[in-house]
Image (spheres, helix red, strand yellow):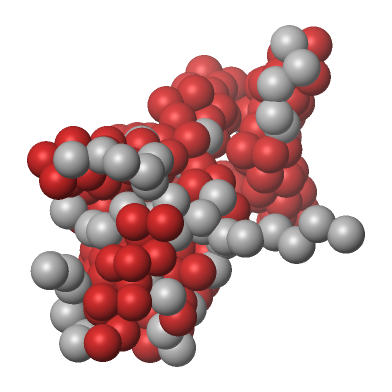
Length: 244
């Protein structure tokens, strides 16, 4: 008997999930297989967001900026230092033949912040693009959850191999992805709520150090909460790819 909500739809989902499992497995082993599949899918959370390395790539340039600004009191010097570090991260990843997605997105954001801060001569503007991005990201997450296209599912689906089967065939995972997406809205929304008032005070030091402090911990918390949610979700239904 299926433990998924939705009556006949849930039963259909359970049968589809069983179809992805090896045949002739006793009931207890089947449950263990499903639990293992759910854990494997949950573990993709770290991969999707670049892991700790990806978070470091996006956090250290901000730290370098505030340190360089305190030492030199020159916006341009601090901006170029942060941009140089971001570019170095991209080069290192290319040299190691690693994905540059997160490092490249980091250097892009740093470049915009560096340009704005040098153009205006205001050090706090280095952090403005990141603040606006945080607000836009939270809005996008909320809208996607309301539209029943939760961004966490959109991001993880291709990695787990389920693509978008969770939307129609696996209501339990749709519910889990929606719940995880709202968790990201709440957790990541803390950053702009705290940092925007600091930005408007013009206190560059406090803004910079708080930006660094709120870089990795909230994301780690959001990833952990998502991982816990997906551990309890039904296993993914692998998408069937038509072969011609």
